[in-house]
Image (cartoon, rainbow, N blue to C red; front, side):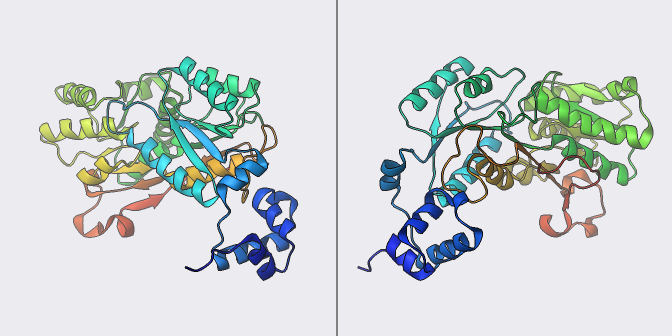
Length: 372
């Protein structure tokens, strides 16, 4: 059996000392970029992999990031977290890190899990999901100086605070581009199907739709409200409310939806109303949207996962940085991508080929904050 490469082998190939290799593996920020690149090149060339258990003993770090596994939610958009977790686990492994999943019944229980995992030195940091206004989980992590990154903005707080690291998808941009796409096809009365007010994510996505409509048609708040329909995150609820909408004179040309769950319900309703060419666009680009041919906004979760780790560990680091000593950036706002499919009936059949070559467009119709 071939002998596995060692730190000494890497040092020899890179022409550096064993300590320099160790520094690149554990504290890359203190190594000059040229030297670090030579060591990283040698690591790749030899296929060297650090011994995780030995490193944990040496650094007194668990090399583990904790994240709550949310319960299965109604609708179809819960798959977003699964896809994010897969991307995060895969990219964390490339940095020598592991992802630990745990469950909690509510925010209070989640904080207790944070405490137990922190006190037992089982994790080095946490990722907080499903953020909300005045989130008690984030306040606890800041007070205890536990490293963390939120997937989702800390709504209602100082978004530029160095204590509140976060990464999010620009819901404003996604809904804005979806609406501009429909406007570009000559449609005018574009309705919005969203969640009840008070959801940071939902409110931000509606703002993108409203901005595009106001920019193009000069609508005021009352006119925007007249084009807005709201319901809970549920396929049956969305189906029922759109059925009721189509049972009366609605005057709509298309619908932009806050999620694929609501878009799927809307799609069912418009088909049953005999208006199969009525355009519907969702948000999240879930597997269900792909399966039924629903146009949707892709969150680019690989980029979200990469940004999460960069905020926690730096651009190339292999350990979690202490609270308050993270990357220069305090947050990253990822630009989503609109994926247009045949279901939206926005182009003649000959214009639509594969999803990749004719059905995808990237955000970029405005100059909001991007990847900051």
